[in-house]
Length: 571
Image (cartoon, rainbow, N blue to C red):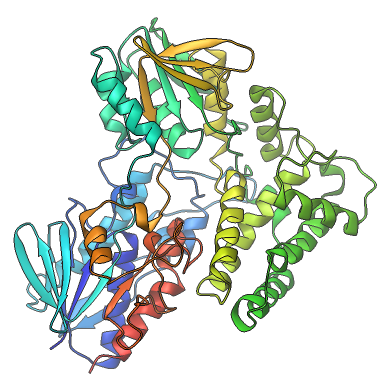
């Protein structure tokens, strides 16, 4: 009997396991399965850990989580694995089109994922062909047509391996190395290299007279911000439930100051308030079908695409149609569809482009955030860039599916990924409430936006001195890095990946990207004469696959393709 090892049991590993079992049931094939997951709550991974604080919110609407479907009943070696409900059914979720979208804490989604795994595991408790090893895998070797897995000083053997380990640590940047060294040599300074878990800030958040620098101005910064300010000295209070307008109520004086900063200083853009407003930006089925056909023509069949125009031109047409349909809701103009398409194409290639329909991002940061909030509420004329970002979000599932495992050359794949990353300020935006909380903290003089745009940073004995363009300065005694590492394979320093690279069992699709894989998830090896039985799903395959960070992608076609391919090739 063959043995499969699944290494990493977050959402992707969980769904892969379910699909392997389902395919085994259909094909009536036998298999030994070993799972490796060191965390206390298999099925969740660190992102959805049950023990994280409620201040960590998801940035996808609970409405969208309705796409996580139920697991059917499965029979495995005469053991009945019960069905498990969809997220929507499990959460008893209902919503009217005019009701604001909800963004629950990530631990709620984690609870769903863990319960889903445990219902499977409990059904297989007495099955000798199923085993969960609660240990981290350190090294994988391939010897004599077998994988030898080293975990917690024990070794295990398998015929086939699936790696779904998600985000891995990378070598820190020179800036982080220097800041860490600076903090270690001074008793009065603290440096945190990672934003998570936010529980590491528990001893910090109730201190008085402290200034904290926050490297990054994205979703992780917002989680850190909330974790720090919901404390013994104050909390948020929503004053208008329909707009999520918020104040920060101080119960006593703390003198806490948060100072976020990033390379461009641009804020995240909140998602539309409710399904009704979100529908304004939704392409038609025909537009999505045409987009899919156009991309596939260039990325799957031909190999002659030499720019990203094949991707952005059909999207520009969709945006132009939608923006014209917005009519009085949009900024007043007399442009025709062709002219708007041209503006969209220019902006997608250069988001510094200045145009009357594009939101001026050089204005005061507070006003800029307020403007985007009003657009998300449908209470202000919609700028073209806001429209582009929301349309892009609706197109992303099609982009991710059709661009993954394409025939595009490596440099063009890098350009496509860079373009998608550049739109995430809009498409991966937080709930309106998060941005209202930022404004509330500015009003309460707890958070400063004066240094948000790439300040000069000097290391001084008293801390990190931040200086802006107007020569204002502020000194932080605590620095928190909230910028998440990109999945650049050659920079990953976890032992499992380092050893796989050293043994030439994996290689990157591009020096700036992740592992090169086939459509079924199996790794492309430099040894053209032998296909190794190892597959990689998820973030470490970025480049081969596009769109690896979204929770819904963990329950998508890629995992189903892997499971079907794996079971089909079983003897």
